[in-house]
Length: 390
Ligand SMILES: [Zn+2]
Image 1: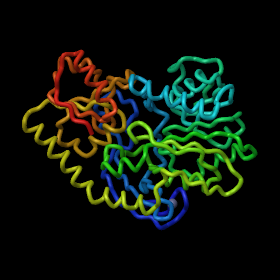
Image 2 (image 1 turned 90 degrees about the horizontal axis):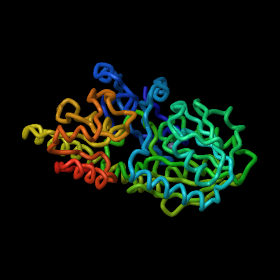
Image 3 (image 1 turned 30 degrees about the vertical axis):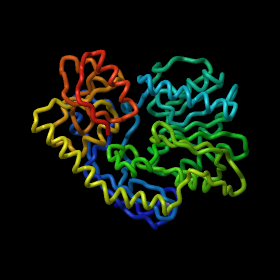
Image 4 (image 1 turned 180 degrees about the vertical axis):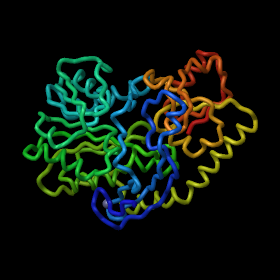
């Protein structure tokens, strides 16, 4: 039974607009064999639009599945492009709010990379909370500690001048309870800074990025729907902006006791978002069929094709074309996923140096942001395949 009411505003004026059939329920869990990988359960994804607040959610999301406690691999810090970018935005954030010598809590801290960076660059004290935390993965800092648990009310008493929550809210089904739990932890304070980062649904809708839709992401925000939601939950917006080629949406806020009406200029209206949804619906089948034609052409020409970029995007992409068996390998530079098998798809991840002997004819790059970095690695291996960026 799909959830008919909006998890953000409880409205029942919701409307299903896109379905992905039989998507693997997990996409970045580590799996050691082909058999285990293809036996991962599959479920439909039903993107649903709330006409009252603009929130988009997967109304067929299954909350009973354990997504995060069994080898969830989400580290991004292996790419020089990413590392430079994350250093830049962290320094900007520290300078903007003078985040120095503060108590910082990160909800959904992953392996702790970002929290360590914020604490190192601003001389802060940090506590990270995440069921997928792995001890010893990041550099140890005596001022930073980790709690391997799901965030809940009981963490409300942790000292918090700053609360960080990056790439976590899109995994939360009960968005309202989650943000209310954060709000309760700062009930008596007005000067706490909250930083939220999620993928932007606007870009997904505009470029028909079906590869960014997968089971672990049940909640999809735009600048407008995120802004409206945080105002509704008792926050005043300090800033809202897009980063990383408009893929990532940031919101900075602080608690307020008054009903804040401060709308940020980049927030789109519900009507505008509705128009993006309509455009997505009218163009998505053409987009899917163009990629299918391309893959079939490569297959007919006996081309050796690989994807570059593992993780959720590759599962989101291959879910639609898996049965064509065109993609032979998926390359990723994250050493913690190499050798593992892709959930639901069953292809093994390989290290970039594998391409030296494989000599691919075509590489499909999952994220254009990394194109130059990948090109450089290919030149160093004396390879010159055709590059296609999603
Ligand atoms: Zn709503």
